[in-house]
Amino acid sequence: MSNPRVLSIVLAGGEGKRLLPLTEDRAKPAVPFGGTYRLIDFVLSNLINSGLRRVAVLTQYKSHSLDRHISMFWQLTQMVGDYVASVPAQQRRGPHWYQGSADAIFQSLNLVADESPDYVVVFGADNIYRMDVSQMLAAHIESGAAATVAGIRVPRSSASSLGIIDADGRRIKAFLEKPDDPPGLADSPDESLASMGNYIFTRKAFEELLHKDASDAESKHDMGGDIIPAFVAQGEAAVYDFCENDVPGATERDRNYWRDVGTMASFHEAHMDLVSVVPEFNLYNDSWPIFTRQQQLPGAKFTIGGNAEDSIVTAGCIVSGAEVDRCVLSPGVRVEPRSRLDRAVVFEKTFIGEDCTIVNTIVDKYCHIGNGTQLGIDQAHDEARGCVVVDGITVVPKGSSIEP
Image (cartoon, rainbow, N blue to C red; front, top):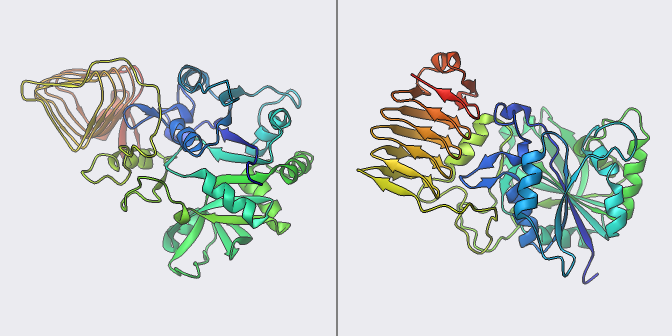
């Protein structure tokens, strides 16, 4: 099939409870990342760069900012039928919301019927990575399988907390949920293959299994927990090894980078991966750009000795006589004299006063940090002032005013 018709579905309805309070007022895929991006921008950029430009984004929880972001920026040319469409839960199958990721797609099968694709791509919305999805699609078609699961190599010593793929060549013979003794790979016994939560399906078989799952009262209606194991049981599931994916412009350091930012620790660590001289994940790859809506702001400004080292400082920021080290500052952040920021992630339009010390801290949008405030030094004191401490990281909720 030289030009297969493909519909991409992005699952973006998750609550992201482990990222509270960052998800208190927004869906997890709408959480800011890397200064100017939202988490969803990474999967959408991968699909668009791969030439897969008919995309439905399924939303549910606190989706306003996510819907607005998609409608304001992710507009593709209508002349050739390309689109990124935000699709809220519509209760098409009865008076209930999505009961799981598989149920979300089952309730949205009208999208599949309207597009009439040969293949359906189903990806999550909240991981940080680059991937040429067209290479995975080609592997899926070549395999003849009904379902293909993207797998990433992880150390076998830490694989017990993940969903692990046990494959015989390309075919998956077992899908193991958090196994005590994860199987090693034939070519690398100290590694196991973990599911990335990214799938490609042949349409007819996928629709049939979704209908069967929907009628199963015992099912949790989950893609990874129910749909993929069902395909495995039928001998119809293949694996695509992420290490085989070749993205233009990738460096040896960031090739095959993939980060699940489902916890505050991993979210903070992923930001630190961006800021070294040779970054773990390179945002500056012009051959495979990450797209987003850029605000119309002046360039960043450094005054009276203000300095930033190993940091990302975005448009509209003013660093005035302050020291910024290993930080990510979003648009419109202002840092006043004699303040020191180390390993801080600061969301947009936040003001940080004079003589502040802020370390290992995430500050949400529109916050005011008063003169002389210390954050990340005494976590009990941070909590007493309305901050949240998660995974050892101090988090300042959106719109907070924090004083010493």
